[in-house]
Image 1: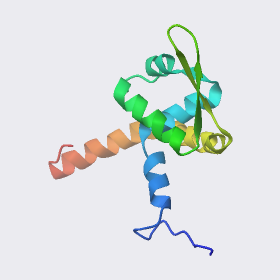
Image 2: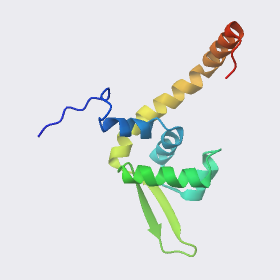
Image 3: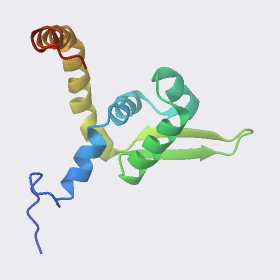
Image 4: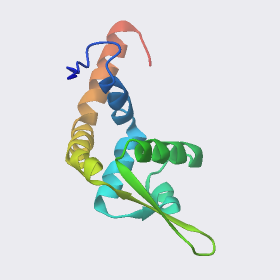
Amino acid sequence: MDYAYDVYKKNCPTRLVLDRLADKWALLILIRLGEKPIRFNQLRREIEGVSQKVLSETLRSLERDGLIGRAVFPTVPVTVEYSILPLGRTLVDTAQALTRWAEANVESILAAQAAYDARTGAAA
């Protein structure tokens, strides 16, 4: 049976995918892994601000979704390396475009927020 997915329907499973991809940590991880396979601690160092717990949970979720892979090497201590899978690779360009857009437009957004706050007396 064919099912017509519609993200505007509340029970559509595509919303779960959008939730995952709307997460800043997931986007940053996908972009980093799109460059090369990386170990957990290197990811943690390169993605400033992410906690060990959040990084671990996000990696697990991305692995469950089939976007990244996890390889364990029998070293002492054990080495764990993450890499992008073909499905995840299809998202890297889109994720990079979003981050480039954010970097290019953050000043305009901050100015708009300041103008709004001054006009309304609101502060975020």
